[in-house]
Image 1 (cartoon, rainbow, N blue to C red):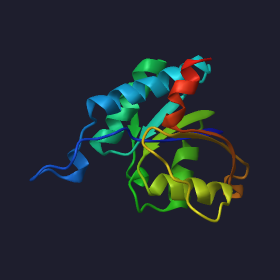
Image 2 (cartoon, one colour):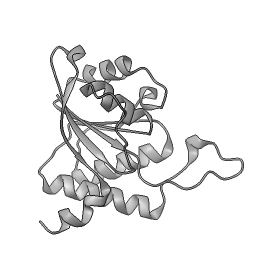
Image 3 (cartoon, one colour):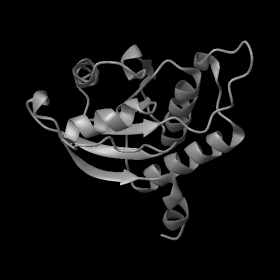
Length: 162
């Protein structure tokens, strides 16, 4: 399985009386997510499934990828993509869908720690907003994975030149 991990886009600041769960994407966040989705589409990537944290900003990010890339399946949410969740449980849930190409939308520091755990790095990878990583999951699942690539949003301008 190819597992793609992405962090949600830029979100509004928390307002008085607002829970962290409710924070929505900013206009810049929406635009940057659309840029990343267009880059991935130009790379001929296709997702069989998108799984997201249930937090609003993550679901909104997932929806943009879903729409721009023409993903046929519905977006699935799981609490395992909320920071603090167990990595083995998250991996087992993601693998249980039985798809070849899965995009998971989550949060920091959870995604960076999860990626590092998957590929055996000693320190967490820093996931900037709208970063995306591709990991080839090895069999058996417990064997971890190989990092194929990581795209950082600072690379947007480079991708626009090719």
